[in-house]
Length: 303
View 1 (cartoon, one colour):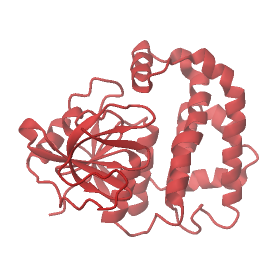
View 2 (view 1 turned 60 degrees about the horizontal axis):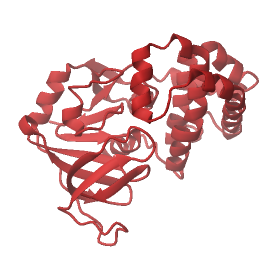
View 3 (view 1 turned 120 degrees about the vertical axis):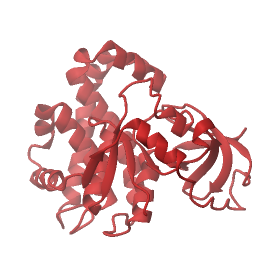
């Protein structure tokens, strides 16, 4: 029996929408575990070892943190239809960081004064910076220019096909969709304004929105924890001998993000390649969990 794809997410999460769209493109069935928008997250932290960002994907006793490694694992396990091509990962990182920051400014300049205090306090702790609505409002005119420039790239990229990847969606489409979807969901009037005069981008938005999210079935957080308990992690993999860190299989290490949500995760190194870090963690009643991270955007050091 194939292990289930379990997505720990919440419905308004922009990064989770990338994964949900990929499920739809590939026509996959998956289990939905709704996690809290803010801390505490008592049914997530035992799986990740401290990583708190959403989404997290779970397959048995293997846990995947960050959409970069989540999308790569889905593509590896379900290669048809092919989604990752060319320099898509570079496009993904741009959309996750530069374009996302423009989206943040536009959305919270519009709705920041209605955001609950608990959310603001949580995001300040997550980012290590003040959640300053006044500063976002001040930055919004500049960020509107940036957002429009990025959307203009989309318009040019769609000149020769229905999608950035040509006739079918690619990872570049998935990555860009996150920002267009989030702005449209949170501030629809602003989204319409930012895409006016971009007919190919507007049609692309409608095409991707019609794809859906595959076959979703809800799952209780306790059931997901039981699924980890009942499974064993996949093969440990190898650690490249020429890795610039000099780390070896079996080393005690710490991994953390390099931008925000820098909660350190400790474990024993079991896999290290150009694009992935895998730690083994003993999780009490959950026994051994393998936690997977991408290389790009993460710091790995010996403990």
